[in-house]
Image 1 (cartoon, helix red, strand yellow):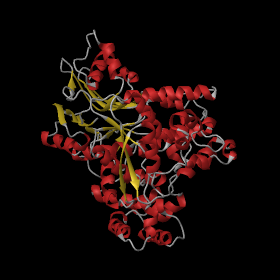
Image 2 (cartoon, one colour; image 1 turned 90 degrees about the vertical axis):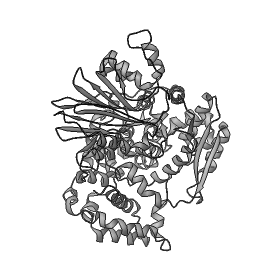
Image 3 (tube, helix red, strand yellow; image 1 turned 45 degrees about the horizontal axis):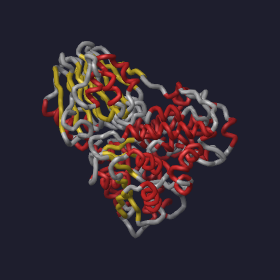
Image 4 (cartoon, helix red, strand yellow; image 1 turned 120 degrees about the vertical axis):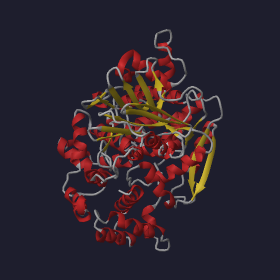
Length: 589
């Protein structure tokens, strides 16, 4: 696990060594163990290393014997042992045990087509002097972040946007992206909140040459076709695939632990981990003093069932002091306040080890959120036309309606008040219009919500404290399998994760499998009503000057007052505005 950074200048103008080093230093939290840089005329590839695989010989960049191919990566290639074994006794045999060397040797042997053979989470940069091409590659699901900014002469890339800013890119807000933020509660990729900075899209790579930048899709989930099988066949393959995904993600030269909430996802991962571990398993949980938000009893139950040591810290839900830090590490505004408790559990785990497994992805693949239950409770949604279904679903997941935007937006944000939020999701729906409606909804969240918000959470909050988070549910085999399953077996008779729970009930027990889902969050909405505690009110006043050029202050203040007096519930709208203010303050944008 690492952070990568660098640049490519089409006029062969080199960046100063000091500025290049600074690009790495601002993301040193991603890799505090080592920095490595390759620089040539008008080009550089850099790496901040968190040493997990081949600690002694895993220094990056890796360079070919002829000095013409250079590779850095952020992430882990979980099947690197099998790939290295294939290369043994060939001219491309590996000389270390590093998974990054495997990337170099495979590229030397097969070219960029080797990507389809990787099972992992990764953002990779490859400089090929033979082709005069720089490749920037992102994993299938976007588990690992990768950003680019290109002004036509110089292209900057990095694992985090703050590194691109350190490379000299100007920090200016992209108001179209901020409209996307107020539509979805996060900025939908490929946009970012910074003008000119974009994601390399999940499952894509960029090929940058002296003349152009081309984006190539190397993995497309939409090609999967739904199948009909017996429930027992689905549950059997579910457990087999997930078990192997867990087994691969236990590969490490340092100990591996897990986040454990006691929910069905994390309990399943810990249950499978316990089958493969040859050292004591440590699991980590945050307990809340407020029983309405506390899941620690379920975590303790799961830990006891699987013989793990549960390391828990009981805290107050009031984490406002950490909100600015979470926004800084995210680089962008996020209205999701569960980043705060995620940071706390990451801090707890980082005191003990460098790697954890998490249950992220299970809800999006198998219909675990109550929003799916609510939306599909009305059978008529299955009979809607494609356009009406897409509009209804987008409306159901939207943060602000068009009328709310018209009341709230001002200044440079005002022209976007009439934009159609459904424009964001329409291209994605078009790709899977042949799928059933439930899987269409899950596909939207897999392609937008996961890389735009839900995977940002474990990556950024973990990396903030130099902790690697691995996600077995997002093994690409598991994802492709999940979308072969008809939607009616994921959400059946109002039961979320129907086939998932059926598959794991014997492993984790009925009480954990069928317990009511509890969101891992903090009660910001209730704090707004508490007139005795003015810390949130003070925060509100502090950030207002940072957003009053684009948000109608009087409208926002009226929302606050109505919410505080219990007339409406404007929690999501207000916290999105607060997060925007914290972001603009943090990055002076």
